Image (cartoon, rainbow, N blue to C red; front, side, top):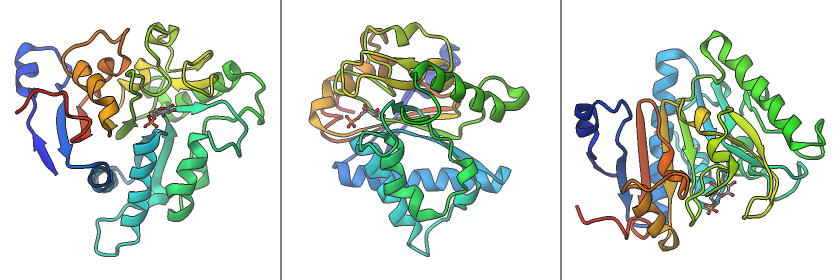
Length: 269
Ligand SMILES: O=C1O[C@H](COP(=O)(O)O)[C@@H](O)[C@H](O)[C@H]1O
């Protein structure tokens, strides 16, 4: 994995308090998925060494699920660094408010790609409710998820510690279900319902910037030429109202993990 140092030192010197992104570029989507999977396993394993537990926020989307498939593959390789999946808390950055067995569910894809294979503790898998569950309205489901997050946070605020929060990005720059020029951009709640999304399905539940920005590390994983322009804009200071991905960062690190096609619009380093 080739890691460019980024401008972290410059940001620290400038006293912004927000870590400047690291940018990692892999040759193609397949190698990107594997590299992110290896880094994720290492990060979660390290958290478990230090604290006994680890937590990850999952994303849906093409590359997000490819990463999980790779993590499942690594778990089957005995010589690899290992994660005790029974001691990982799993959350979601966003979810589609559709029936539980709908293929559009990010949860369903994550279970199929990874969670069903690695022996998670069901009590630690914090899925966002589906539309055919306890809540008929996404606002009620979002309020319930906010309660789950707050309960896990205890005295520490409205969201628990997230070691790594994974995000994909749409070609127009959406992250989680925060779409350009949408009310979600100004919503200060940790989690909320999103209606009338431009990308189907239209009704979703999403973490907001408040919860995303509380994560230790935010990893934005992007593959494909169709996203190159948005990547370049996000990393050159675009307005997050127009390009939501430009506004995400972790408290300790923000990493943009790209394949060469998605990095195609960045200035040569
Ligand atoms: O709708 C969504 O899209 C993004 C990106 O998906 P991709 O298929 O273009 O990679 C995803 O990260 C998000 O979780 C999902 O709900």
